[in-house]
Each structure stands twice: as C-alpha cells, then as structure tokens.
Amino acid sequence: MVGARRSVDDMSIMGHLAELRTRLLFSLLAIAVGAIGLLLAYEPVLRFLTKPYRDLCAMNSSLNCDGSLYALGPIDGFSARMRIALWGGVVIALPVLLWNIWRFIVPALTKREKRYSYFFIFSSVVLFAVGAFLAYWTLDRALEFLIGWSGADVTQNYQINKYVNLVVLMMLSFGVGFLSPVLLVFLQLVEVVSPRTLITQWRYAIMVIFIVAAVITPSGDPITLMALGVPLTVLYLISVGIGALVLWRRRKSAVE
Image (cartoon, rainbow, N blue to C red):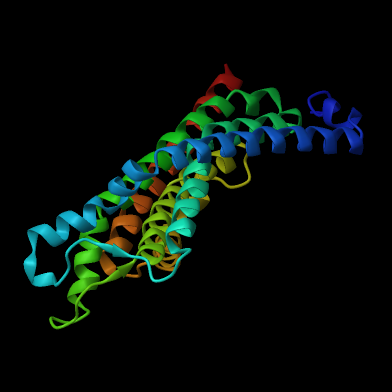
C-alpha cells in the first residue's frame, strides 16, 4: 500500500495544484469546444428539444397549445441559447471531464483500483446518456400531465427560458441520477461498503432513491418520478450484484 501511494506522498502541494490547474484547463477547453459547437448548431438543437412539446400539441388539440415558445424580453432568446450551449457543452465534454478526474486521482489509487477506472469512465458516459435519453423520452408524458392539471380553459404559452430550463434540468437530473450505480460499485470495490450491507438495507435504499428522485426532478410530476425512481431501483440491485460478484471472484483468486 505504501508503495502504491508513494507517487502521491512524493508530490508536493505545488505539484498537486499544478496538476489540478492542468486538468481544469483541459476540462474547461473541452466544455468551450462543445459549447461553441452547440452555438453553431443552435437551431436544430432547439428543434430537437421542442419536438416532444410540438408533437404533443399537434396530436392533442384539447390541450390548448400550439407548440410555440415565446420570448417575453429582448434577452430571453440570447439567454436560452447560452444556457443550451453551456449545459450541452458540459454533456459533450463529459468523457474528457471524467478522464481528467481519473488522471488527477490515479496516483492515489492502488494497482487493483486502477484496473476498474476505464470501466467506470465508459459506464458513466453510457449511463448518463441513457438517463438523459429517458428524460427526453418521457418529456411529452410529463408535459401532458402538467398541462392536464392546468385546467381545460388555460391556454399554454410557454416562455422559451422556462421551457429550456425544464428540459435541460430534467435531462441533467436523470443523467446524474443514473451515475449513482457507478459510484455504488466503486464503493464496494474499495470496500467502503459491503454488498451484504446494501442488501440488508434495501428498503431504506429504495425509500432514499424515490425521495432523491422527487427532489431532483424539476417538473415534480409522478410520471417523471416513476420514470427515474424505478430504473434507479433496478440499477441499485444490479450494482449490488456486480459488486458481490467482483468481490467473490477477488476472494476466490486470493485463495487460489
């Protein structure tokens, strides 16, 4: 263990700060490149984000909406464009961000822990993408529920900033929520928590999952809550199974 941590012990505080600065610069550069790309492709991106709303209004005339968005101030359109570019840039740069985080903490990892790093980066990107897609896929159902509760005589006129905020926050909250199994598997592999503990506490875990899902979902509707809570519950059980399997194989290899 001492040998595995030697590179960390030998590095000075200034060395750590220089490494952190380098990783931050690379991460910010990746976000900037992604944001610039989205600024140039703003129109198709906006059409993509508004498609669930436009399709919902087109298929259901009783909802009193036409799929249009409105700017109530001169800077609303600009701020919506910048918000999409910024958060979209973060999403596009996610592999680079995770890679730089890994490169910064890798000296503090043992050889055994380093072997799993590539898997964690790959699975994090995939799970985030799946979570964001699930949020987008359920968006029309969430909007239909929310519009239905507005009342039959209420005409739906959405401000562009508020609509963009809702869609972006939903996709980010789902994406971040879907990263929790990766963290859970990692904590089991470094033996911070055990699979046995996670299994025995499954009732509390499910309760916490749905409470967190209710808090982080910006729309607050039950459809979105279930769309996030149920998959996270399944992923919780899968992550416990993966952790138990890897630890079992590790102990078996140690005995042999």
